[in-house]
Length: 273
Ligand SMILES: [Fe+2]
Image (cartoon, rainbow, N blue to C red):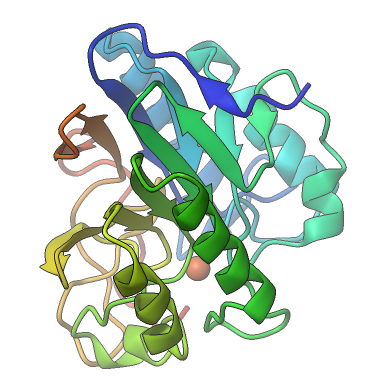
């Protein structure tokens, strides 16, 4: 069953975001020497052990690295300890037929729109362009966003997509950003209810205000990219995740959390990704 509305357990909506798990079918599949299933499991275990409670979780793309149905089954099994509805969307590395093969799922939800309590809504966009690393939003996606913002003018809105709609100041990653991002921001600016945008893709923590909207990117559960580096470079920071607290007045509190430092270090001699 598709879960298209969430009733918060408390006053605010508490969300957990994990992103860019880059899983493989083989259990020991690795990206730049990090075994991605192990780092993903370690992140889920740390979240479960933290005792934090959430209303739902978000997975903002690049779930799989090898396009296999089994890699998505690993994801579905891996999140089961969290027992939360999980809203996911595709990244550049995802293969939609395999992604869909695990649906319907008791946890994973693939929907475009979710009502969050009485004050918020969430719109999930598909920015994938098959076969290339950059992103793009079709006219259909932009119209859908415009429609949801128009239909619910009194609801604060959280927009999710895989690609960064705001440059992060890293030349190699910014080549692979959301192309024609201006069209996206034009839709956002037509309305006054978009409060926050959350993406994945850049494997690093970003939290900036842009045209009055809080734009956030989040560490991957596997390898991290070094911020502000013009050329490909890995970061020594550990895998992480993000907590979001959506308040009734439209404000957002957020925090990035990570595994203990030194966990799951990649091969720093890698020349590319
Ligand atoms: Fe990506």
